[in-house]
Image (cartoon, rainbow, N blue to C red; front, side, top):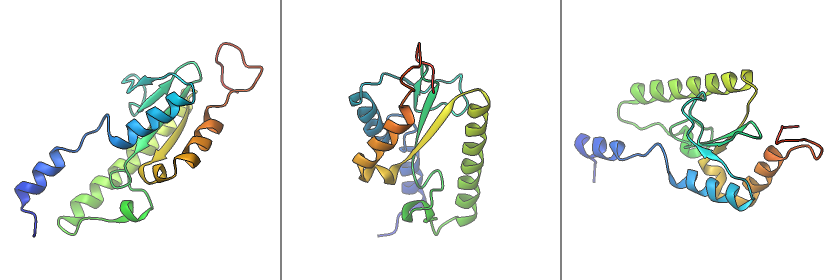
Length: 144
């Protein structure tokens, strides 16, 4: 059954930007690893999903479709209104890159976890462990 424009509009309005299922999965993972974090700090570029201020690390959890990932779900563009969606996703990708550059310039390290990567939580956990690891001799939470 084909979805009407009104149904599609209602579906798209219901898409959340915070507390998404993938974001909650990453939060649980990082918390279980013993790290504590802040959420969605608006004073940082891109309003990162997780912020570890003492380590100067941030984590973004990106939905594959919305942020133009190169996986099967991210590469799929809706058939209806293709130009709009390609333009919108293109702007998201450009904006994401600008945020990562601004964070790096401000002395922050950033990681992006893609929604599709969460199908392999062990792999994501290992990747986060490497990303969050601080040199053994570091003092006062300074990154290595």
